[in-house]
Image (cartoon, rainbow, N blue to C red; front, top):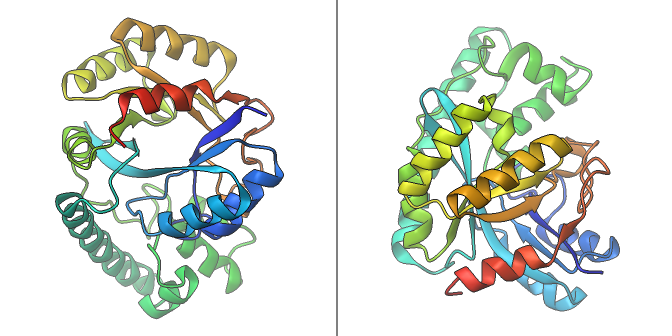
Length: 281
């Protein structure tokens, strides 16, 4: 099969499969290639590369960075990033520390609400990897405060909830520049999750293209056929590469499966070929 998935998460951020397990699972599902795009980290890529050799499946180095655009959190995917670029790694470490500071504030807020969560609890749940709100949700579930992780988000840790602390995020331009400095290809993730109108999205893409954006995720588990058609039109209009991914997180998003999303995806290998032509990897 020439089917791929260019948006996949592992336990290194907020997925529930290790990088090796994700790669093995992708092979079992018949995928030809996948991109591991964990949040704010590339720590799982070496394991994924080794698994790719073991299971004979192509692994594309990736990352997903969060940025703030006019009070909206945008996500920028980076493909074919250089794992050994010192400036890229230094900036990642800086943003990791900002995330840790946010965790400290969230723990204080939740403690004040009567929940005895600790940083040690979260580190145990994340197994030393990036701590995300999914780990908070898992703590709430394991300690009997909620019946599902989604309930934890709805009641306590989602945006505007009592235990939520907003992250201090870089701008999209800073994320794009960082990815490009790391020899990667910056792509806007899941554009229709930001609640932009078609006109607003077009304006955002125009600005981000001027700032160095090279692609747009036209195929995603949450996109309708009409939305995908709109994104393909915008990609052609602004001269952007087209990518696609399920946004697989394992059991943290049980309705989304690798490669097929909610059953609506069939992402062609030609999208990988387009990225390769753009890349210096």
